[in-house]
Image (cartoon, rainbow, N blue to C red; front, side):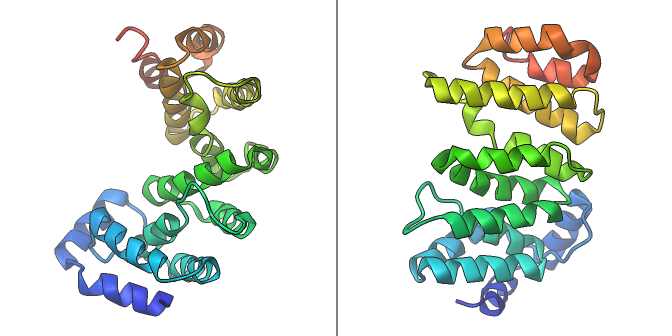
Length: 227
């Protein structure tokens, strides 16, 4: 499968009216084909099954470069796997190379889900992610929190996982005075997910930092604490 053929397949299934609606909704100026995510999923599964890792990486790279909304979603989905064999360094490098291109939550979140898998597979990559936290690019800073969400979800974290959790909470604490809506939303998202497994740690964070956060983010972060 080539990027050109892949986009042609998706384009043939597109709906111009839906494409216009998606453009208005996402508010990001790029081509939209009007294809629903479940349809993209079906095609990605077929493309993944028919190609080796080198081919999937080339396809994902080309789809991302093509800059259609659905193409970038498909590129991310191609690399969303818990295990990538024989080794996943190429996949991680490609995902990380996309981060400076992030310009909206939908594509960014799909790419971040792919990145989550690669970080869990090799947490040493968090050293690179930490560098994102001081980027001038808001979406890069946000990605540091979204890609580390797996460390909010462990019921029985190991000491190494707890150390990573604390590391990311330190990043989040540094973000609290950044009042960009998407940054505040990302802080709240991280804390809300963590509150399902470690509510006391979230309470401690909010006691220390709620005064610096936007009110909506504080409310969202604590939403599960009283549930």
